[in-house]
Image (cartoon, rainbow, N blue to C red; front, side, top):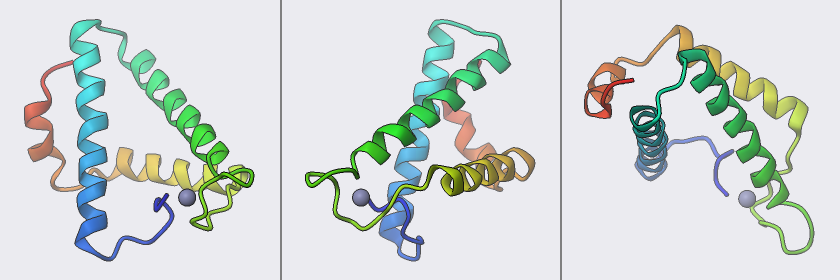
Length: 106
Ligand SMILES: [Zn+2]
């Protein structure tokens, strides 16, 4: 797991872009197949992030867990996740519009 390492190299940025695109595509494809009210869909997505956090944290527990050194701290990590959510919501990056075009419609 490298999620906590600051992204300074293009390799990490590429990995971030790939994950970002995969999540967006899955979200929009699902909504195109089975529409949901907007906030309901976003609430499901937020819950899914919480589930993913729990699963990733569990993958770092015990002797067979990931040894990258990350120690899950749900209280602090939640603040970081909320800050990222708020930042994306209030200040979408410039590339957002360009990336959204192939995503389809809600
Ligand atoms: Zn790890």
